Length: 72
Image 1: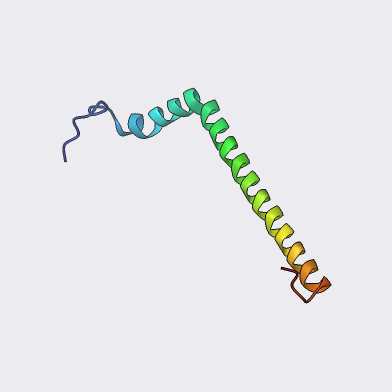
Image 2 (image 1 turned 60 degrees about the vertical axis):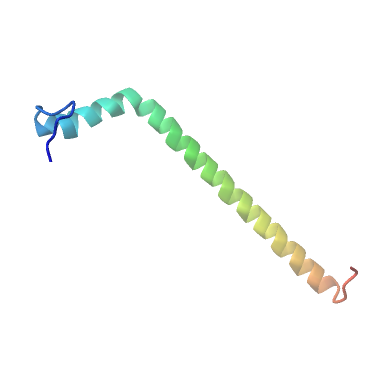
């Protein structure tokens, strides 16, 4: 497989160390804000699921213990 790309005559350390370090320096704030937003969003989804699950559990527990007949 021939490497005819943009970084083809450069040493390995430029491809695997220097370029990623420059990318992190340049886009570090953007990457951190995206990761923070995704973590915040996942936290909100898990919190929503836990609250809805708890509400359903409480409603089923109290409606089944308070009356054994169905009013429907």
